[in-house]
Amino acid sequence: MFKKDKPNILFIGLGMMGQPMALRLIQAKYPVFVHDANQETVKNYCNKIDAKSLLPSEDLSSIDVVITMLPDSEIVEGVIFGVDNFPGISSKLKPGSVVIDMSSSEPMRSRALGTSLKKMDLIYLDAPVSGGVRRAIDGSLAIMVGGALEAFVEVKPILENLGKNIFHVGDPGSGHAIKALNNYLSAITTLSVAEALIIGKRFGLDPNKMVDVFNSSSGKSNATENKAKQFMLSESFGAGFTAKLMVKDITMANQLGSAVNSSMELGEASLNAWRNALKYLGNDVDHTAIYRYVEQNQ
Image 1 (cartoon, rainbow, N blue to C red):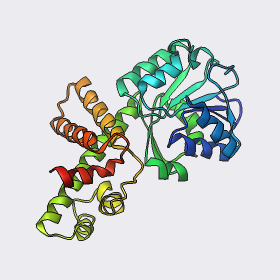
Image 2 (image 1 turned 60 degrees about the horizontal axis):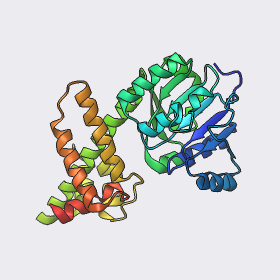
Image 3 (image 1 turned 60 degrees about the vertical axis):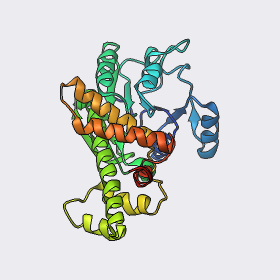
Image 4 (image 1 turned 180 degrees about the vertical axis):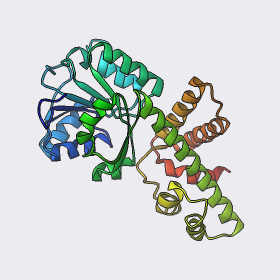
């Protein structure tokens, strides 16, 4: 697919996750160009790490791979197909170019996006990540990839600079589907751990000892191992993933359930709880602050 070992990459989206991810590709000696809607962010980033910027409205004929790390499907589709007076990158990329959407996008829309780009002779992979900012920095993200297997094989060397556990999970949209379901599970366990700790604390148990017991018993989860003491009981609430994004991902999981005619009673209850927490805590608070919401409201 690529004519050289290090294909030219356009990385779009320099948020909390995008910046360290783009940096890892630059450090791996890939020819990387960066873009973000906030041009001040682009300027500061390029000055800081000596990166090169490229506007999507410019000539993209030299670009082999586009990686998007953006807030949602609406913005991804706007970048790819255009919005208002912006023509979109799909009309500027050469045939055979690969678009890798690493955002947390909607699975059904990602499936449709893959179909549309295939008709334009462009290759689409959805490759959302799990692990947060810390694992973006050290390159140990989990990456779930949907799309043609042969395309996945070609881009895997690129992705290996970003993640340690990389899975090909099916056709276009499959990566975003499993990411939404993964975060659905994460939301439920995080909420349930917060509730269990508060209940135990009110009964008179030592919360730290509770976590030790959970981690040695059947109640062990990512939330008990990596969130309870570190961010909940310490009240630092700094895991690097906002409650707003958690609500977004639970919503997508529930929508996916509806799309395949599966009821999600627990999903609806969890979404309601997280929405209430978001109203109480504010949009920008870390998701581990659900502990504070439970403590003060339940």
